[in-house]
Image (tube, rainbow, N blue to C red; front, side):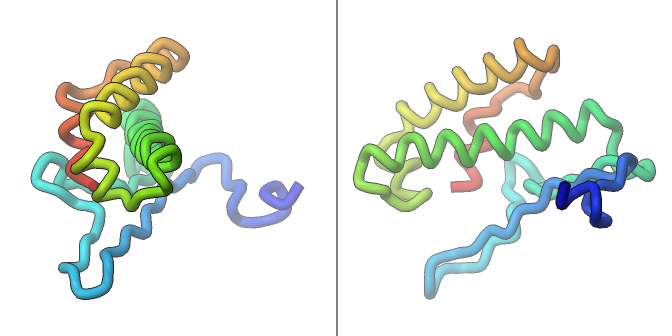
Length: 122
């Protein structure tokens, strides 16, 4: 009901917003990396991105955050960077598994090297 009553339910505009932050004293990040210069922010509608490109970016962001949290939680709730550095094999495996499920469910084909691209955000 809330979305229907607000501007957030525009049928022709859907954003994927990322608000990355760094630890105190570290270089600020903006969600852009060498492997993905477009970053984690995307929008669909009004000719910003086509629907399939938007869906892929939205799913990649969800796969990244879910993977990092699912790897970090059982290891004491470690930080994102620690999940990547110390548990990279587990993280990459989970990214691959979630990407396969999302691809199968949505009928999308993700770009190559998803694990490297998503781990670069960590």
